Length: 118
Picture 1 (cartoon, rainbow, N blue to C red):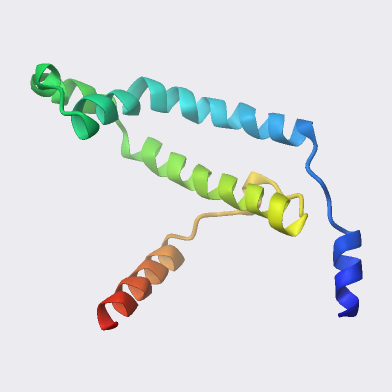
Picture 2 (cartoon, rainbow, N blue to C red):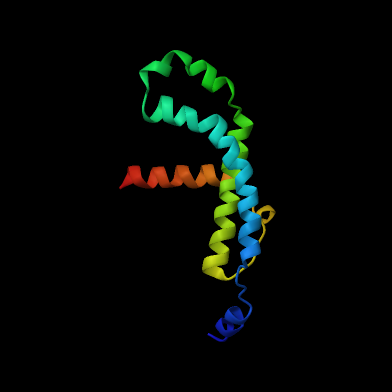
């Protein structure tokens, strides 16, 4: 395996600043989650607080499909960046990973079909 030496030699280690930069980006998504989606999770989905059941529409009125979509796409990008840092020693950026809806849908359908066939 002559390629392995070169691969290991080219490996990069993430710096504190790399993780700080990611943390700053995460903070924006976290703020939105805390303000809009966590109350729905806590009061409606997870615990079903009877006192807030009448106000469900108010909680959901603040939501936007685009917010959820961009958050999920961001989480996909973040997991890819961290995976490549830790497993491959490759320093990549969030924008290096675009969420491919068709690919993910196909993968999920194939996984479902394989489970159904077994």
